[in-house]
Length: 483
Image (cartoon, rainbow, N blue to C red; front, side, top):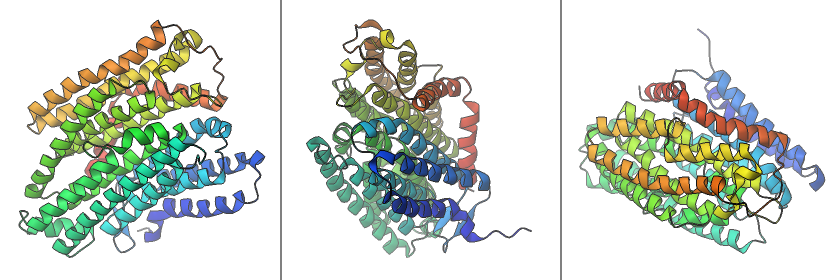
């Protein structure tokens, strides 16, 4: 029998933490003209973490740090997706941040600190570890939004994000403290055992659940905790918006799985939070998709689109079974893939002094570059749920899970709002293919950006034609973590 050190379960996080410290030191001696060194070291840190996770991945569940940290297949898959999405985000962002004077050491270290917080959240097996990872991620993201100090819009967005985020964190912490008071433990595994043995109609548990769900709703951007999403997406530099709208959603899904599905998954208590999630999901689908129609700014449109997509994610979770959780995980991975491409395209069309974040900026894109217009078309079709793109199968998987759970009326509501949402995605396609261009500047991205954008767009089509592998991986990961 081979001995495995418990510390080895956290090697990816430890490696990333050491690399952050190293990059902080190296950056002190790097001039602004050679900041590419910091960029390369950041990519090396993420690639190293990715390689460690990949090489140590297994279906076995392991615990370390006094059972506060868990390593299972779900955490491995989500952490691989986080590392990969942040690497792609940095590659897309490099020309953008360089042209705006934001390619500084602070940007890269904050990205890595946020990534480290996400990885800790994903592997948390204690209320304390969950909150530690959440705050590490959130504080880094608040700072990143305000990194463009000469922009009043970015500063305003950062203040709104910070104030509302602090309020949500307080609510979440209060709910967790009530859970600790009711169960007498911070360990999520033991919490599940205690809750299963107690009367789940306990007033303290139900009140704790309300605060916890409110905190989760804010982190996801679900209605009625969505007020920060449009302003932050619009006000933050697009590179920061891309980060906020991608990898943290993977961590938020893990947060839901650890706390709700695993810790508070007792049958009677699950019925309580399922009712809350139904309300959040329906409101998010309605307000997100309807409000997006009125937007002329693409980043705000995608912000309201995100709210609608989070409604779909919650539908998968509230199904409350293996199929539903698997569909939810599949949906959030697909959503991150689509969001990376959409915001990456905005940065690809932007240049120094010009933000291509209005719908008008995409007019006539087919005449300027048929290939990039096709990539954007695939991304928009996928977000709208048009076959054979992967977005269609993600929505179909969620709807099947909802129907199997007995919520047929909820599936009908989701389909209706998806049809409404298809309008604003197809409107962008119409602008690209049937309107005359307002901007005739050549589109000349770097080779790495051009290659990544092409792979990103084609992946939406390939996973749509062959969704079995990714869907099967998500189901296997969920099944292994819930054993």
